[in-house]
Amino acid sequence: MTILIDRPRFVAHGRRWSHLISDNSIDELHGFADALGIPRRGFEGDHYDLPEEYFDQALAAGARLVSSGELIRRLLASGLRMRKRKGDRGIARSTGVQIPGWPAVDVETILSRREVAADTVFAVVTFVRDRHGDFAIVYSVKRNQWGSPGGWREPGEEPRHAAVREIAEETGLIVASAALMPRGFHRFHRDDRQPNVLQIYETQLGDVRPPLKATFDDVSRTRWATFADFETLCAGEFWWPVAEWLYDPSGPLIRHAGS
Image (cartoon, rainbow, N blue to C red; front, side, top):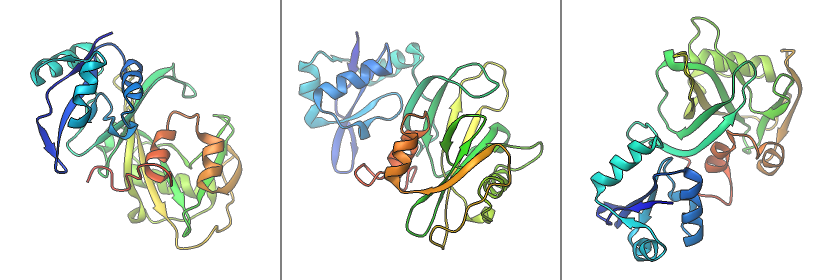
């Protein structure tokens, strides 16, 4: 095990910060951070931003002090570096995710208020919420699971138009494309150079729990769910960290990810 840390020199929010990484695995990094009581909200997809008050504790627990340059070099060499744009926030890395018709792949989950390039997007999903904040969810026959409405783009279709179409097909709700707010994306690590991004949107309705009715035969059930209901049905899915970070009433509530 090698946990590496640099000195707390980065200044933000009136504090100084270190960076903490593992050159072996993300699970190892989480385990080290959990043992020190470091909040998971400090995770940035491939490292922890560590407040300076944790610096001495990390060293005492076995973290090895290196320069910032060495830390970056070791992270790159490990293959664990998560590629992000400025302002994006990496929150999760999942292994062996199974999508119907694909081999199992690894997935990076990133919060962002900016859309990715349309030609990289193979599918879209939208958190649809009513005026009180409840979620419209659908049961996919193909995936055998509950989730938010979404699906594959059609040839030549813009991601926003795909999202509007999927919402209408799977819930019967009509949403304007301008009402969709980017919230992040999942990057699927494929080897075939095909589009590999699942774009995530959110939209909020002015009504309270309007009727839902699927017109697409891949959806067998629809319902409205509170966050607690949503968590019970979906907490084990690879995409759940997005819902947890954005909407969990007891969590960090990163409502403006990427700002």
